[in-house]
Length: 346
Ligand SMILES: NC(=O)c1ccc[n+]([C@@H]2O[C@H](COP(=O)([O-])OP(=O)(O)OC[C@H]3O[C@@H](n4cnc5c(N)ncnc54)[C@H](O)[C@@H]3O)[C@@H](O)[C@H]2O)c1
Image (cartoon, rainbow, N blue to C red):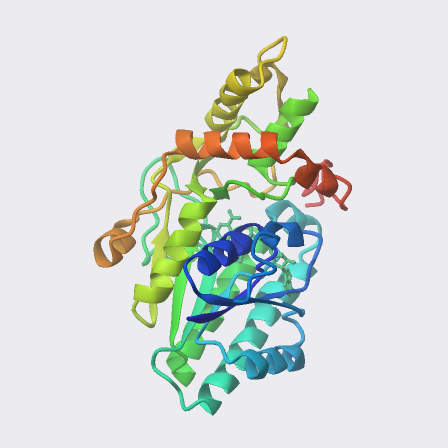
């Protein structure tokens, strides 16, 4: 299959690109190379004959139309987005531009191309979204595909808006689509502004490890390579017009996640004191959702997909990767906003 992947120089997109090439697909990676991108993430496939890169902003409709005409993809996997909740609090405009207007452009370009190709039924527009569109859970309950949308941050609101656009393009214009809403990812190539790499890198530097509030917030963590596998699985087997929740079956409090990472580091890179002694509670994020948890019944029973690693196994692989890839993360530490507290301007 020839897949047009947007955001393929980012964290999850690059995992999709690497896996898709490994499985014999042809990939066109469309990325604007924002602060969150790193072409190093796809260096292992960059010279592959089945790989092409297009340096294009999804806010540029004419450029997208050219990309569709040039590459004639069988499917789209749309991951390009502004993705960091803290940045969305300080500067929501970029999130509306890329996540809402950019998705609108992707839908229009895909629709024009699909209609011009005779409306092939097998075409898919796969929109990659987040469980954050559902808002927050109390102590019990799970997000199903029928949970009403109730986004709480500018990031999740912009993703919710994009999900609605995708559904509308399917209902109104007949564009064949699948939509996935996934829980928090972690793994190799995770940009060093997100919780898991912040913990690893601050610990290694002997700096305080910041925990928002009491650290009681619960997330359902999924290893990024399992997410990439799930996405290719949904693309190939999902029913057009259907949405699928993707979760890691790994619910854990932030504070416990951080302690797990610290103890893996204690074992793999022992220091004079335990890394958990660096844990420091800081002011909570405004509008911080308390709990996310995915009910994975649909993807498990209808498509037969489950994650392959436990949280403990995935975290170990992740910590090992950061220990072995210092030049990758060092090069990103100078980027704008990395290593400073964001998301306080509410
Ligand atoms: N990270 C998570 O835990 C998570 C969980 C569920 C869903 N998602 C969704 O998965 C997708 C990918 O997330 P990620 O964590 O890999 O993000 P990321 O921030 O690591 O990467 C985003 C990529 O999109 C590109 N991009 C941004 N704006 C663009 C634009 N206007 N035009 C073209 N390219 C642009 C960036 O250059 C970057 O390469 C997002 O849609 C996100 O909402 C993420």
